[in-house]
Length: 73
Image (cartoon, rainbow, N blue to C red):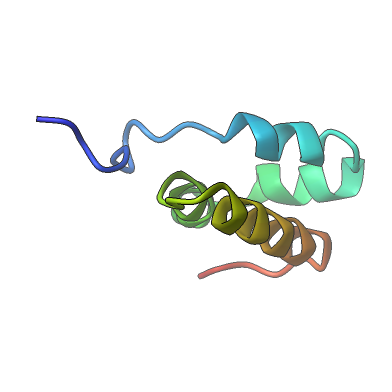
């Protein structure tokens, strides 16, 4: 049976997210300092987007939150 999304123990950082964060050292440092539950929340939102437009919208929102040093939890 296929899984809908990775569990908190197997979730990896989204490649596209990391590419964007590599463009901004301060944002990347903030992301790297986040705890596992915040990172999971971010990657879960990206992984569960069904449409490319939804994923792009979420990606933009997440990048903006990280740049503003806002956490999900």
